[in-house]
Image (cartoon, rainbow, N blue to C red; front, top):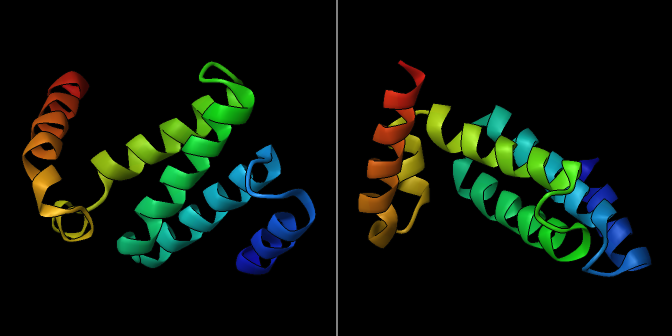
Length: 105
C-alpha cells in the first residue's frame, strides 16, 4: 500500500512535493521493519532531499525524516548497514556511529 500511495502521489503531484517525501519516509520505515536495509537507505535519502528542497532544512517534517534516517543508521544492526552502504562510505559511517554511541553514554 505504501508503494501504491507513493506511485499515486508521484503521478498526481510530481517528484518534488512534501507528500511524496512523506511517502518515501513511510516506505523506508516499512522496509526498515522488514530488515530490507538496502531499500531503506535510498528511500530515506529521497525523502530528505525532497523535504529539504520543498520545505527547508528546519521544517518539522524535514527534521523528523532526517531524525528517522539517523536513528535507523545508528541503531540498526551494524552488519546490515554496512552491507547496504557503498564500501567507500564505511570508514566515515563507522566513525559517525562511534561518535553517536559515545554521545549516548
